[in-house]
Image 1 (cartoon, rainbow, N blue to C red):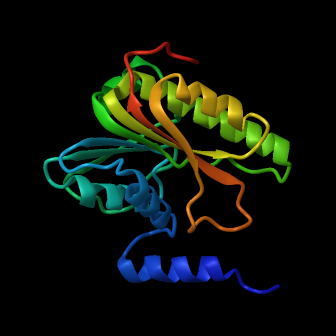
Image 2 (image 1 turned 135 degrees about the vertical axis):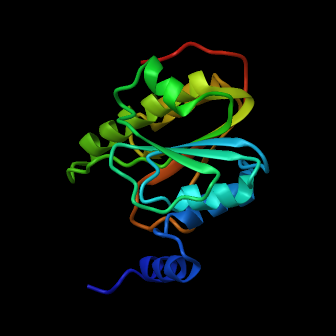
Amino acid sequence: MKPDPWHDYYAKRAREEGYPARSVYKLKEIQKRFGILRKGSGVLDLGCCPGAWLLFASSVVGNRGLVVGVDIIPLTLQLPSNVRFVQHDVLVWDESFLEAVGTNFQTVLNDMSPSTTGNKFVDAQRSLQLSESALAISARVLRPGGAFVCKIFQGSDLKGFSDKVKRSFGRVTNFKPKSSRKASKEIYVVGLGRGAAYPLHR
């Protein structure tokens, strides 16, 4: 089997630039296209391990900003001073979780992937579950006008989820970065301009 040239290029580039994963280039593309990260703002990164998105987000928001990462597994990365980590399962959260991560974020990022089975339907449903939880969390922590970036596996429920995001944000776009692997079914739902408070879906 021939090696994946996309994997080789971005993985090598990530190592050279000091990032723990090639996924950082997906966030860089999203930032370039949509400008979802701002100097001095707060960012919540759901499913943050191994930390590539944390590092890039922290460099954009700067010392006056704050990036909070959340993941179910421990984060071993040495973190910049404007980043903190909360270990938690985003599928099982309550008010104590919200108190731990904080509120009034300008941006919520979700790059979570489920444990895959090889069954496209099952995998898409698991991805949808994570995405629904991320959207519910964003309902509680995003400030008005904020942005929501959510990875989801393409499947029959993608349109329904995208429509749900549209009910809460002024502009919603489905975006697949060039740095995503060609065979990947992932796509990012990007919501900009969060409106007034909306119901919590759980």
